[in-house]
Length: 396
Length: 172
Image 1 (cartoon, chains in turn yellow, red):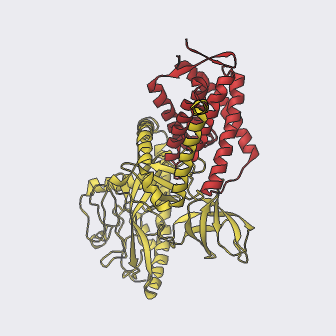
Image 2 (cartoon, rainbow over the protein chains, first blue to last red; image 1 turned 45 degrees about the vertical axis):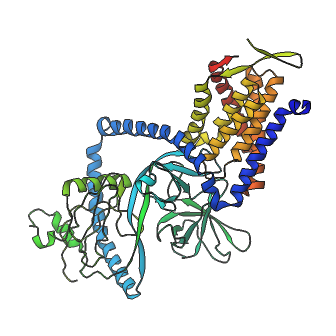
């Protein structure tokens, strides 16, 4: 008894350490069950911390909005002029791109090619991190109550961010692509070499499994390959920064993520991915001369063409969606609007939903401020379509 | 004033109120998770570790130290996607060690606190590294410059945090 009393502290220490090591070993060995065995602890911890985080983020956002919407309006007019000029440029560029897209669709149809596209996303705010350099992950303010599920892709306008790893009632844990336990199927844009994108313990991102006899130029764009079943094909991941010979006949390719993973504030969770077969566009593409003509004063608008604008919006809680304009059975060729930031997408979509009310059969659209259903383009989200200038179906 | 007698020397034992005992670790874990998103350099600090050392040295009870450290560590683990226990084990060891050392040494002055924090930061990192690599199988690289810099930074911040903890601790 004396010995027990004398070494009581040490015995308790050994007991506590043994219990924790045992628990750790069980979790490591049974990875599938470990989630359920520690679920309660994680729910309590997240429940204790996330309310503080949400409150702070809310306060920060509110004060930021107050500043930007009321006090910081200097230079808005000049910015507006610049943006209008940019829109003009982009509309001209869009004509060329729509011709390329039409050609691609025709070729895809010939090959019976099925493509994936993001049909629905949900905007979420990043409220906190894991607090550990060994766990590169962030918490977002949407959970399973909002329809978030595990393994959903998380992106920003710049590129891929990660995937949903765990969901809680009103928050979710997102594993970033620079974590050493993450893996993304990736493909190099020009050389079409495929590999697996992984994080390292130091937070860098590497493209693995590319043979050392291949040539990969620094600066090449890295896209998702779609092979992992989580990220749809064609999303921008980053750019190659450094290529060195690696171990076991593979190249060591460093990649700089396109999305700034250290300064995440708002992200989009891809809640729905659709697969469709490409169909050739039945109508002719927009012409530069038509778009320019609409800018000239005195040119009357043509009513039959006006109908060909994109569809309106239908409000529904939770999401914003755009049907694949120009690709569905009765879709009309509508020139894609200029691409804008995610925040602007959500705001525009919400505004469209509230102002237009109902949509046409050809185009979709459900809208709330915190979710965006993106355009059929697999890579980037586009702004909610607003009535576009008439586009004629004249043959070239 | 309650006084404990160890090796013939008198050391004061402090306690913390229940709200402080619950809220301070919670705030430390919350700040550790939240601030690095806005200020990435902040990730070199380990606030929960500093709070563990601060509590342990003030209470001077090895049992209280190891349980406080263990609970703070498990809370920190629960926010990550790694198995629960990595921080738990490391901080259990630190909590026990800091309180045991607190009995024997005077840790009331800033210099002693600075050195004590560097020492226990190193202990924490070594234990964490060994468990993460040996038991969980994670790839980790030990970087002496990084660890040295982090140790110094944590020790400097630790001195400030201990001064704040001095304001809320109560004599038993």
